[in-house]
Image (cartoon, rainbow, N blue to C red):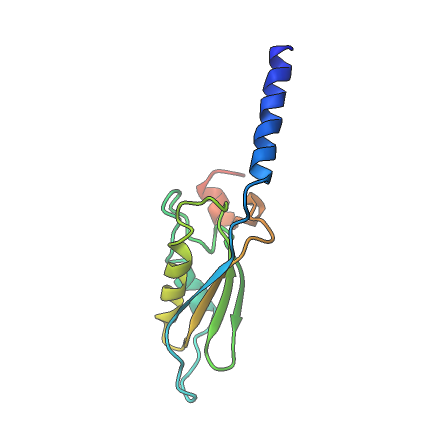
Length: 140
């Protein structure tokens, strides 16, 4: 067997092993307390700015510009639901970033309970980076 064939076989084995890993569970984290019915609601822009205060500690780019935030839903009662992902299921900050995001949004005036749902579909890719994040990573 040639060295090139051996390398290709090893790569195929690694890819197969990655594909067979047990799926990482999706979960939700909640922070905050219900708003009073008469309370003014936070704006979407305020929520986005709160999410921009949370940075991935490995590359120091915020989770919003990294494209980790998939959806922000503001409910009539002032609660906020956020779907987010991580760059990979094995990300070492998987247990930290969603909680930080929930806490940052819940701390805003005009937000009741902030729920962050960690999701894995669709998988994150570099195509989700904002132009600002691409510039920081020099990916243009």
